Image 1 (cartoon, helix red, strand yellow):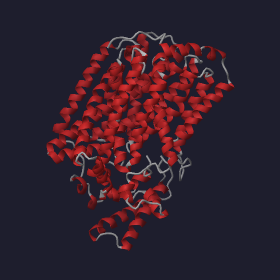
Image 2: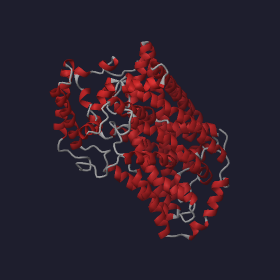
Image 3: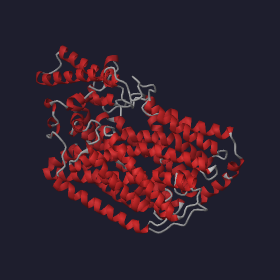
Image 4: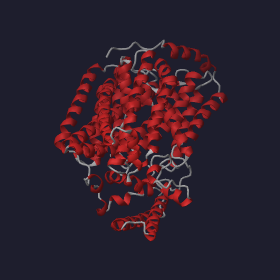
Length: 623
């Protein structure tokens, strides 16, 4: 997360005179344990019952990885939506909208449009040509061992970013839910996550995702209705309330991009209107294009999404599942937009950052605030329900991610590279379960290390890696006759390394000197306002406190460097997709042309028939 943007209001958060009470009537966000814990236990109990039932049916590798191919299109559509409507969607996007307005909305639109790519290009061919993993698709007409090895590494790279986002959200929620330390919360989430995957496999993961998708849609719809009622169910009034909010205006006035615009004379003088315009978070137009490319193309390369198409019995069901998922996901992202802007109006950006600097708790604070306006019990009930449902959401998503990562390691590396494909069903399932345990432990460690990150932003980076490495080689393997082993390996390596490398030297990293510059610009602006007499007398004490805090922030950060020892970003964009996606495609194409392989070309006809007819797919098992 680029902490420069968040640091400009961070000083407000620690000041006794600027408490959260001013905005919402509370100094902290606390769930009522007498309401929360019963709801929490009910949801966990239901999902664990699903796991126990699924464990009885999980006997083969096909059962573990793809539920035997017996999930219907409608069921799979809800499960895909459950996989997609993650902690990043519900917590991160609503939080980003509440802090940065329009730019947060860009994330919602990108992820929704992405499924058009999946529907038209990926769903049917992948279901017909693959078996369990990304490696199965790529290795069909290539040298399988090196291709599977590299594909597994790429899969783990993508899922690491995504898993980090989910684990952070899970830790925050558990911290709120049970009032326990973050580390303890992460460990608890990890234990449940591992249990879901190790014992239930894909069948359990699918049904948990279906259950939580329904619950999450219900909770988001109720909260969005309350937001709409506050504005008289009038969209025009809703946006007038945003632009007219003095708290939103004050928040925008301290953002570095707005200060820069004021200095250059290009700023919109109405700070509330500026909140509804692009550029507060993604300050470079190329960054917005790059983000759009990564989101639209990245979904089709996400390993846990690709795996879902192996769970349905026919290509028709694969297409149907995408259409069902698009309808559910589209509806959900409309709701998260209402929640984000609603939180900006009714909780205020300052109040949100008082609780969580990254904005991840915006929807939860809004639930307690709007429910509390009806009665304290309704506020506690709505908060408890959303916390428990979001927790179930994260559990389902991380289970899918762990399953995808463990499948890549166990199926591609252990079974097909180490054992050369000679492993019986019992050994394959055992390898999958052991690998799931290891991946789950890694997820716990990563979650602890990434406590302060904004989850929506991390997920966007995961999509950049998927769009740059996985998508080019999947698309070319399915549709280009000349694609071969050299092309697959080159595309995966170059796309993955380029996207991760560019992220490490991009503005996503924290550059202390930049933080110091932002703090200096903020306190100089406030001092100029005092000199000009534009600060009201009753606000003078608060303003002086902010200036003092900003000076301290500048002093603490001046002269520091990023984790790579850089004082500023080498790559100007937050999202590398505009560079790394073409790099992945070009690397794959050039390598395939430089090192042609007759066998790969001759086998293209078989791949073409398989992807269009499904010949060679295993028979589905009824679930």
